[in-house]
Amino acid sequence: MREPVELRRKRILAVVHARGAVKVSSLATELDVSAVTLRRDVEELARTGMLRRGHGVVRPVADDVPARAVPAARSGDTAGDGAAIALVVPERHSYLYETLHGARTALEEAGARITLHIAPQAAGAERPQVERALAAGARGLLISPRWRSAAGEEADYGWLSEVEVPTVVMERRPRPGSALHALDSVCSDHWYGIHLAVDHLISLGHRRLVLAARNDSPTARAIRSAFSEIAASRPEVEDWTVVLSSPNAGPGEPGTREPVPDLTALLRERGVTGAVLHGDEDALMLVQRLTESGIRVPRDCSVVAYDDVVAALGSTALTAVAPPRAEIGRAAAELLLDRLAHPAGTQGPVRRVELLPRLEVRGSTQELIRSAD
Image (cartoon, rainbow, N blue to C red; front, side):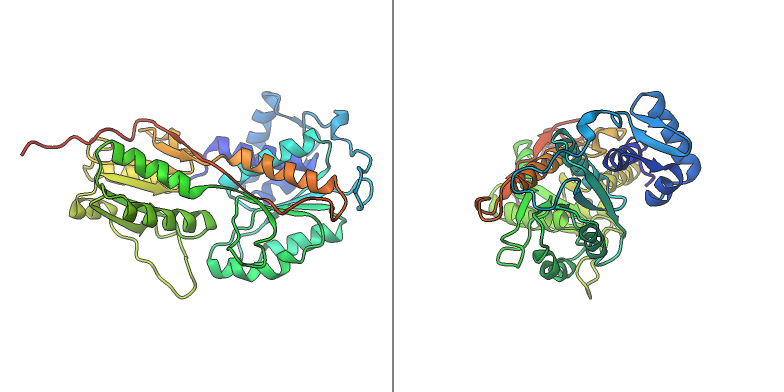
């Protein structure tokens, strides 16, 4: 599915605001966007006053505002004046770019200097980015690792737990008892998000449910676990199942291969009338396929998407669970700034913060219409 224009432009703004000034050619390569598309986006963003254009360079509109200058070192700031805070996020990840935007806003308001490091889509890609940032003198780290599998997540625990600057993990919840359990983190409460989705469907009379979800991120794994637990515990639910949402929604765990069912056939075979679909792009495509197969949304099947990045943009706007993406980034940045403002040993206990998602009810869910016996 082609990336929506508004999301691509959000990614452009995130990089420009984090860097302060970026070459157009470098920006196109970094964001994996054609030069023609990038220039068109830059022209439109400049026209609407959201960034400034120069000779082959783009800058944020606030580039000349004194608040962007690096402040004098605060009490307990041992890295020296001008040391930056490093933000590390995966490339081409619209969900986490909104988290990045929230973090960047909070850091800029505090006058902190930022360096953005985008990790490519490869196992272990975050570690070289972090090492590069530390070698350049970063005084703090905000990081959202991709962690496509639980094994890949575990592989990063050792080196990330040994980073020698204050670190906050954004929108990730390290495994309890792991080496990162005692690392500051700020995350959405995905259990609660799935609770909202299931409870909404049950309240509308739906009793046979399916979760069609990804299996290539910590969020996906948390959603799958929560759905299984909640659906099994609700006596109203007569039947439920969890399936992979699309062929590219894996790979899941090494050595495993999860089949991708025909969702249309599955809904008919099991009499499913309520579906939770993760993430938004897969959800929109699945709804299109259901419609093409004669399953009407929401008359025949109510659908709740999980992510709410582009869920409202479909021909039928999707009811969606909306994790507080920008607020996660802001809370993580504020926590890191608090760590940096206090000398080591006076910073208080480690904090594992969870923020609750909300449910945005739109046109893809309705009360179940039962046929007459």
